Amino acid sequence: AAVKSYNFDVQVTNVSRLCHAKPIVTVNGMFPGPTVYVREGDQLLINVTNHAQYNMSIHWHGLKQYRNGWADGPAYVTQCPVQTGQSYTYDINVTGQRGTLWWHAHIFWLRATVYGAIVIMPKLGTPYPFPQPEFEHNLILGEWWNDDVEEIVKQGNKLGLPPKMSDAHTINGKPGPLFPCSQKNTYAIEVEQGKTYLLRIINAALNDELFFAISGHNLTVVEIDAVYTKPFTTNAILIAPGQTTNVLVRANQAPGRYFMATKPFMDAPISVDNKTATAILQYKNIPNSIIPTLPQLPALNDSTFALNYNAKLRSLNTPNFPANVPLNVNRSLFYTIGLGVNPCPTCQNGTKLTASLNNITFVMPETALLQAHYYNLKRVFTTDFPDRPQKPFNFTNAPLTANLRTTQSNQPRLSKIAFNSTVELVLQDTNLLSVESHPFHLHGYNFFVVGSGIGNFDPKNDPAKFNLVDPPERNTVGVPTGGWTAIRFRADNPGVWFMHCHLEVHTSWGLKTAFVVENGPGSDYSVLPPPKDLPPC
Ligand code: C2O
Image (cartoon, rainbow, N blue to C red):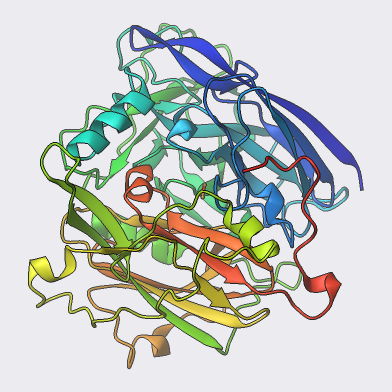
């Protein structure tokens, strides 16, 4: 296998958007950051050197990191941060995966500007299982704040309220011509009539699930979260923070200029949409003076579109790309997702918004959990996270207040999972305060989304309807507001693996936990020794 090396120089760079200039944290001065290209089976060596006045840690979202959580990146979960002046090399074996993933800072809210694409090409000589595109492009959807994001977050914490929302969405870091001072700096893809394009779309937004469409053109979905899907054609896609979606687009319309556009689904609070980001699909030899038209995007609250769209996602499930869905369950977990209000003596209003799983708000440790696990350090975490909530949750009849208070312990409470056991996790939203789906992301694994529904999960009747044949396999799934999602995976990757809502605002409030997956028999199935340059805590 080949070795691909990258140098990631974390630095502060001045960037200007929406007529506002500000210093932002970048990798190599680029916003978005550099694309990591690698081939399935290769080894990646990414040397991160931190020249910024912030602690840094980078997560390779969706890379499985078999036995090697040391290279996973979430700060205080698998490593302590890379401090100013320090370096750390992420040593990653890219095996058994191909497709689009992405990387991002995994500390504070720094992923607002520190993110980029990961493109894993299939092994040499292995074609895509769909018509070969002539060209490929990455489209990273993001958010832009005119003010300093870390300051905005501090302000929000002081008040115990959500931080101020972003000022624009972006496509490859650019909001597009609907925003002031953005006309010249618009992202554009030049296309040739009759050719097919593979677009690798990544939702790097902090807090918004997004619709994306191209006026006049259909999108054929062929892959999600670096797993091939049964192709289907749609006029718009829905993509949650953390997710990736590959689509094929054929340039088969009248030569012209067409807007690509992205806007939120179920933004909270549901407001007027003034954040639509645009980029341009431009046919060759068409002058820039032609004004493009906007695509029809679903309405902000179009949950019917969301349900129908998600129901179309299916694993390809061919002999070459089988869906190995666990058919029996060794460990059954049921976690409620809640947003609540807790007392906060230091907050301006005396209360603060919190978030919880099984009514437990996660507290971050000061030592990385994986180190504590590996060296058997005591008093860093406990493994008594409950498999189900203490009180059953009644979505339709429970009094509002019953689910608003959460408990918080001194140490993080984790769940211990036996090696190679098959796990089913039902995530039940009990969200009485907000309208958004919760995009749940599990580190170290892909999982199968075997079922989903609105209202209370019904343990008697719902499992009979699970798709155990070709359910979508992914690393991040949107749990519908007021509904549930069931996932299954085989716990064959030992280590400590973070699981959290990929809405940064909810993660900050404690909507996260971690699994301790025990070592298997013998050293071939155990967590690898840590690298020498692992940042000290
Ligand atoms: Cu993409 Cu834990 O994150």
